[in-house]
Length: 277
Ligand code: AMP
Image 1 (cartoon, rainbow, N blue to C red):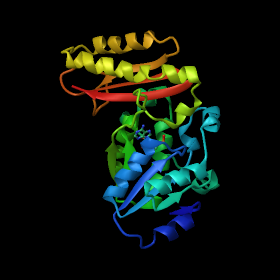
Image 2 (cartoon, rainbow, N blue to C red):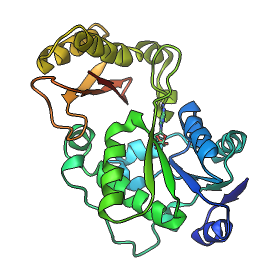
Image 3 (cartoon, protein in one colour):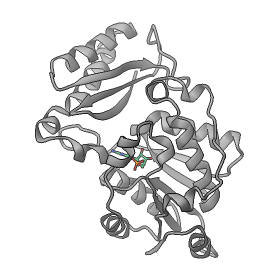
Image 4 (cartoon, rainbow, N blue to C red):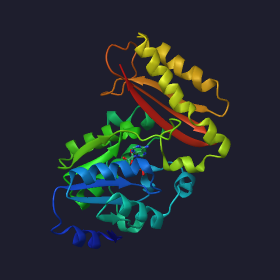
């Protein structure tokens, strides 16, 4: 496995590699969720490239960017064991050289849910992913459905900007107690970690309500909120029942519904979702 840190080294490493090329953009502090994306790419592509870059443009608060866990040496070992061929781990200046002055501005798909809670977040994501897609030139890029809206944003961006990389959504990998794996989980205290499975329990309650015939989206939101309210450590940011394509909030559930939420525990913002119906 080759580790490269500059655009020039990346270009050299990619010259004449076997195709198709599979790409997994990450912000590092890798866990089994990331490993599942690398494994999927490994199974489907001749060459696998992972990027490891904590993108300052997608963080609202500088403190959150600075607190984000980092350990590139550990990440490289995980990538190698998972079968990656090339890791691109650039500095901020390498990605955004002096004078960088462009931002990809997303439309309606980036407005609700995470976009409403984190203004500018998806423009930062779309900007770095468009740039990385252009640098890597992969046939396919693999993304986790834990970040459901992110997949929708990147699909839209690649289609609109005519970037010929297929966006492949992959299942969410969870801990045994249901907590979606996330680099942020490491910042939970032991008590917070013990409380955190409430997020997936709340989603499961929503799915169960729909499976039992509930068609009122408000009733499903209430069922999820009740589960969260029983856990004093959980501070909900939003609880949503939305259309899986438009991401608009539903009143009546008459097809598939995207149940999603953001919940703060110990000040750590956890997101998760399930499709139901
Ligand atoms: P991140 O490093 O958090 O930016 O995530 C990089 C990629 O890994 C994104 O496509 C995420 O959606 C994906 N990912 C993060 N957590 C998980 C998980 N628990 N299961 C599957 N994919 C994940």
